[in-house]
Length: 450
Image (cartoon, rainbow, N blue to C red; front, side, top):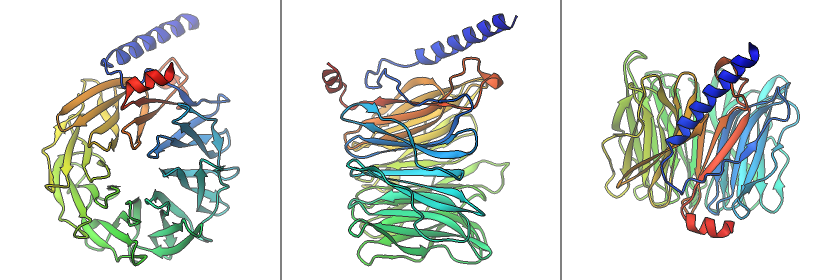
């Protein structure tokens, strides 16, 4: 009886998988290869919180949390664009459970940042990657006696890095930032950015090609929950005082994208209560005037918004709506205007689209990946969204898609799946990481393969 039920379950799973993959259009630029960059060595292992970043040359770093049966560890793998393969996964941590790893990769240099249990507190740890030497041992950028949370990291055009986190200081949780100076090879300039009096959460950081950086966070300022920001100026080597971009829904978080040119976009949602739809807002930082513009409403929906940007400053935002679809809108730095939102997913009666990820390539084409929840299984989709239209690809079964893009417009897509073929509650936690690429020049790929 058990064998019969198992065979039926496997048959159902295979039928679902075939149906999902059959939706993939004849777009040969999505590779038919689906290499695993991480698989479990033991049945008790599983993965969480994968992140992805590519440099201009196409090398890519993936980082995730791996449960080894005792605690979570930071685990990494590196994709070689020259060899077109993933390397060997390795751990950056030995003892102490880890939280929220984030990654940045630029000019052949990568950084991973996370918080880690170190006795009575959670503290910040950072590790560096270079193609010549590989991974450094993790360091604590600053000595601390209170816990830290909400890490983020970015790299500018000269190889300097910016790390941010929130730290318990007195009765508040406040945003702090440090800068890695590429010339001296040291982390310096510890600065507390958010004011005392109320706690701040959910930091995001981005850096441009000239060495400037932006940080956003949300904080109750005594009157309202607000999205706040501060900017690092490369000329004066100082952080600005914080400013308010607009009201934000409590316990929500904004997203930030900074282009190499110096343009930046922040997006966030706000609503009167959890029972009504959210309004989505965006603000643009213009590097020419060195000011943030006024918040512009770009749509309505329910859930977190995400934004991507390219070097010239072309940006695309994506957010969920009540119907189960996703909406997206484009921003032009030339006009300073957002397009009307369009629907980039198709809800089905039994499910809804969630967990969107977004990147924008040098030509201004956005790739948006998301997981469509079909109740008993999830399907990964990827949309290509240009000024001339959209194109959809069904990728496969999985959740939590992540994207990165290189300087040639090649897009890496990473998602999480399972070795289990039964589906539903019969399966263990997610314990595989799988990937594929959208290739900007598929004929060259085919020649290289021969």
